[in-house]
Amino acid sequence: MNQENTLRAGQRRSLVRALGLFVSLWLWLLCVAPGLASETDFAARAATDLSGYLKVDTLNPPGNESRGVAYLAKILEAHGIPYSTGESAPGRGNLWARLEGGEKPGLVLLHHIDVVPADLAYWDSDPLSGEIRDGYVYGRGALDTKGLGIVQLEAFLALAQSGAPLSRDVWFVATADEEAGGAFGAGWMIEAHEDVFSNVGYLLNEGGMGMEMGGGLAVMVEVTQKVPLWLRLTATGRPGHGSAPQVESSVTRLVAAADRIASSPFPPRVVPAVGAMLRGMAPLQDETFAAAFADPEAAVQDAAFMRALQLAVPQIHSLLRNTCSITRLEGSAKINVVPSEAWAELDCRLLPDQDPESFLVELEAIIQDDHVRIDRIMGFTPAVSPAETELFGAIVEVNAKYFPDARVFPSVLGGFTDSHFFRDKGIVSYGYAPFVVGTADHRGIHGNNERISVENMERGTRVMTDLLRAMTAPN
Image 1 (cartoon, rainbow, N blue to C red):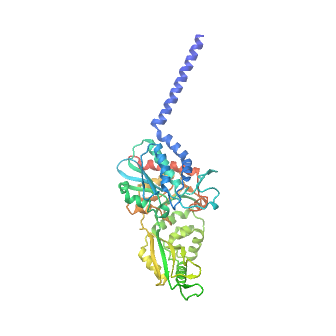
Image 2: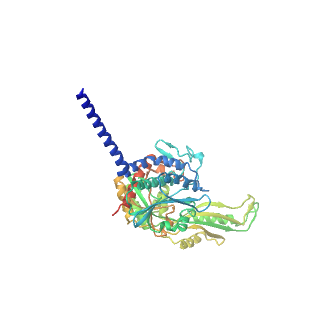
């Protein structure tokens, strides 16, 4: 009996020691290594948090971005992160939060809350459903840019919870109105709250990501973009009755001017940033474009190549010349009235080194009609961020860990983002989302059935967290 009691006592002591070791390990995970536990948690919740964000209606117009601000604010509050908010106009909300660090120039994580409208008739599910099915999160803004915003937020929270000392401030910023030009969002922020960006050296925004190509994976980091110049053409002429056609009218003058613009493509040329991008893409192309991308300066002189490129990849073709798309037209308000005025709107996009005034002179020469007036609706200034920076190097290093065979190179965007506001202030701004997206999914941006994979959200959070750690680690 004594021997049996001794055996049971020994078993109890072993169990107590085992429980003690378990408790010690658990406490270590919570207190000593919170970053390790937190990163996994934040990556795992990214898709669910995105689903909730996509359910918030921030369609622009009208925007109502303050709804998105409220959603993001609840997540920050749950983790004890202080933040600030501001409305540039009723309902046009913006949010910013900071993790304090050392004296090195700060880093901003930027995304926009507003999304473009979507037509339910052409979607397989409600664009505001945030539905998760078959490994994807569906909804307007999944890629542009609520998905990026949630990944930035999860990485921001993981960095905060790690408790690690930071060598620089890190900002999480969510803005309104990007889809309409950014005046109520980034443009307002940089003027009304200039202090937020007083010691900022770097900014990460939308505009570049990993793209699957025939020859492998290209990770494109946007360093500049074509410059939007939105114009209105107003043609004037003698009004009259539709039953008595005139030799010329405001409408015929407008149609003739639009036809001359459409049939007079601007000369192709290769700016340095686009040349670097195409040469980086060349090894990933099939035989159709590989040689041309390797020597774009020669290729653009071949009209047949330019035509084939426009048919196959219009986004790349648009980077090789100034362009104008005729997007809106209006004449008479009544079918039997010849109007005294008719107008058209042009979405012109200029190469980064193009002088807008010289371009307008060139456009006037194409139109060749003193009765057609050109007015500016909107225009930005060109700016290029250098690729030889600490942040670009960190992007290359982190991607090498997750995608060892990928090619990482600077890229140029045919559209525009809010980055131009910050480049104008001397802040190095890159378009970079830590995702890998195929061509089919990429078409969902401003298209139908926009989606992002759960894998992209989880892995993207880990990539972004590693990038933040690399950029904030003490020297």
